[in-house]
Length: 235
Ligand code: ADP
Ligand code: UDP
Picture 1 (cartoon, rainbow, N blue to C red):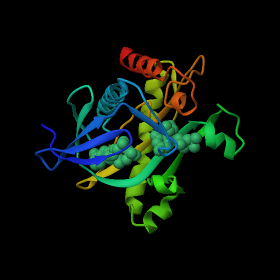
Picture 2: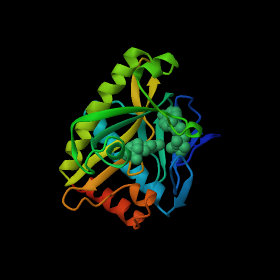
Picture 3: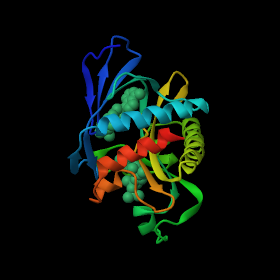
Picture 4: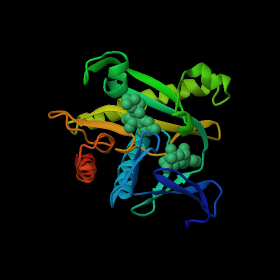
């Protein structure tokens, strides 16, 4: 399937329409952004690495009967996906206390939570992606109670699957963000699951293997993204 018109250009990806209205092509860019787009950078091959990691993880989740928008990897930077009616909510799942969570609630940095936390954010960079709860989502018409129930159930399942996936590679899934969209009457995972959208630490050394290296100028972002891909596909 070929790219037609550009539908949307975001911070990390371009979205193209195709000859079939049900499918889109996502092009992963080499740009990196943080703090709602206020910090910007790039490295060659970053888009390809995020596409490769997302492809692997979407296929892995599909094996566990988690529905995703993934159809096919088309090239290094391109993924063919099902076009969804996006729900403008970022769903964050946390297993380990770090960053704002540790600070806000005075939790020990790096401590394991007794139970995963699911947070919802309204996807709106201008407003700084404000935190919302299920009731905001119903009240603002973004999702019904049934849809939010399904979203929370899928998010928990994804967390359980990916936590043990990374555990087997001596990596810890600290937290991650996923997005959802509607397709017929089902809810599928959309967007990407990559080091841009997850926090992943090495279990032995706590080395950060994700976008925090860019956010906090820790260096070697390119090497670490490459190492993460190798560890993901190695086992
Ligand atoms: P942002 O919009 O946050 O800058 P990106 O650069 O990653 O993010 O842009 C990708 C955009 O495409 C996001 O707004 C995301 O919600 C949207 N999107 C992802 N998957 C799909 C899909 N399957 N159907 C429609 N839109 C999608
Ligand atoms: N995240 C993301 N996109 C965003 C915001 C967060 O992918 O727009 C991911 C981020 O990579 C991390 C998790 O969601 O894995 C929690 O990030 P958050 O911004 O909430 O960080 P914190 O508030 O903990 O500093």
